[in-house]
Amino acid sequence: MQKPTIAVIGSGAVGKSSFTIQFIRSFFVQDYYQSIEESYRKQIEIDNELLILEIIDTVYYDPWIDDYIRKETYKKSHGFVLIYSIIDRNSFDELQNYLNEIYRIKNSDDFPIIIVGNKNDLENQRIISTEEGKEFAINHFCPFFEISTKTRDKIDDTISTLLREIRKYPFDSFQSNSNNSNNSNNSNNSNNSNNSNCFLF
Image (cartoon, rainbow, N blue to C red; front, side, top):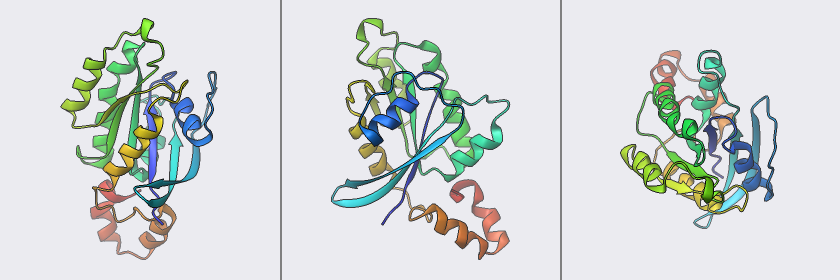
């Protein structure tokens, strides 16, 4: 059974934890204080195939301090949900910084990433237009969704789309992160060095 890992990334208060918990447990958490990363697993079916999905709910990283933590999370992830809030301009403006970090750590700008505008239930407070979000996603060759973690609108579609994107990439480590760790111990060190930037998850 395949065991992909995805990371949910974004600025503070955009709804990363609400997204994760709504998908895993099907209820909305409005106020959630999180000081460390949390990981969840859920067995799901995509296109008649069972998967064990691991979702890493990240905290808001200080780009100047948390480089090691960020690297470890990004390295082991097969895909990314990059979230901003449609009522928060700063959270949208920071998307490019997160993308640049993913590209740098993965050593590639061709990787499964989905751009997500959260809080579409707050239309009367909207600052980022749907067209602006779509344009950003198109310019970076990423799928795009606007969602609501409060109403659960399009959360399942977001995850399904990202998993289908992940399938397009021939990751040797897609089966199991734990198996990869064991296999890496038996590999030649020079081979590990050559592949670590792209395939060390």
